[in-house]
Image (cartoon, rainbow, N blue to C red; front, top):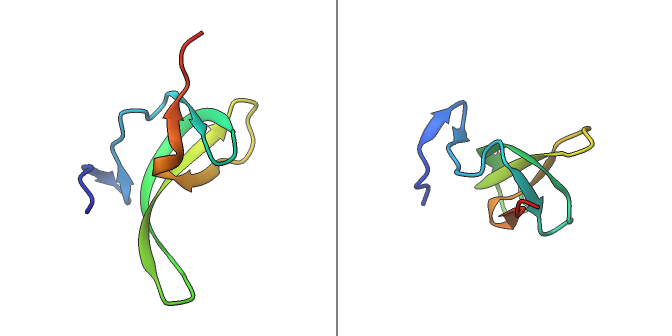
Length: 76
């Protein structure tokens, strides 16, 4: 069940948007740019999933990961 408010174009509000986060699956650190509810194709048919998009600190292509993989990076 989706409990985050929709802020347009499938984007959801998230308390860490614009903050430095870590994707625990890859270890990538960067800014959380968006959380989006997306339809993805699977071998059993389409399903909906929440994906987080992280822009690496050094720039480049944003990484897509499960929202559950996003953790805040503690300030130094």
